[in-house]
Image 1: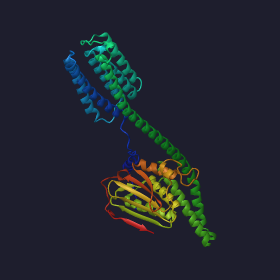
Image 2: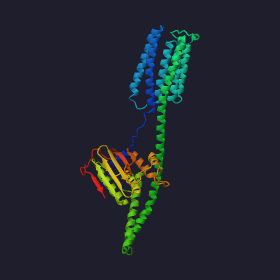
Image 3: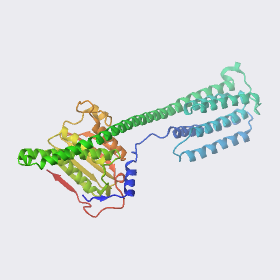
Image 4: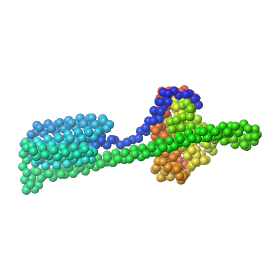
Length: 461
């Protein structure tokens, strides 16, 4: 591997990429969707008011101040058209915007009722629809402001005489125009409440589900932070005894009494190798926690990083049958990331434990993504384990405190802006697929070394 010390700007660039949150599809913001519902409802109100004006004026021959009523209706339609243009392009809607929109609706309805008979207008009860919508869409004090505005509007309608006179005779029953209007108003309110409250309720349920997901994510990340602090502390504590063991074993290795015995000498060499492995693990833990043991960050190519990763795991784990294939066309410069390396090691270790006879590592990619797939020939995952993928202590081994490997791997992939998927293979065994955006790990999207570009590697040992 070509080791080039990375400068400060390089490290900061990569660090910012590694902190990029994953793009998880989320439901549209509840306020925005609520505003969309209000816009749709307002178009229905414009059409309904226009139809009512035409029927009352032309059909029932009731004199109405058409100029004022049609002007108010045109202003409401223009306001709704502007709202549709603005909010269809916006990402978020505040409660203040929803409150203002509802107050415009209340004011428009109050003025139309004043022009169309005042308190004697049977459609006065449409104010209740505004209160219901405010109750669903707004929190206190916004919903109380709308309720107060409707109450004030009714009081004004009572106090201020209307230019239109409507005769009310309840003794006629359904023959009375006021009673007919009441019936139509009731049916209209009931239908609109069922349709739009159902839609708004679904929006709020989606918002609650999103909040629950975010709370779960926060709890998982807090769990990871605690484990990181514990691991970092343990790594610091282990550094001194490991260094002591390494020095003692090195001294023993040079003693004539030890070097003369081939079996003992072989054991010493093996012990030193295992101590070196422990020190490497400690270094990776500290790197993953944002600390170092004095080593400079290493810049390398993607191909070299993958090949070294596979060879290092093969040497450390010594599997009976390890098949590694790399089919990655782009070969950008990257900083060797300990978190990504450890994530792949975790997945490979799990595969080896489930299937000692064969483990496969297949790396592919030619577009914007890097796909790392680990396959084994084991029994596969149980259905409940697949259903709880990515949760801590979700273990297939029945071991207390186990199940953290996949949990950490899922979160590392998510931190890099990627995803981890698990499936059982039809022929037996399981496959764990990690998909990462190349932009999250490369240093410069335009820098692709000439060496080894487009060439694949296929190892079968």
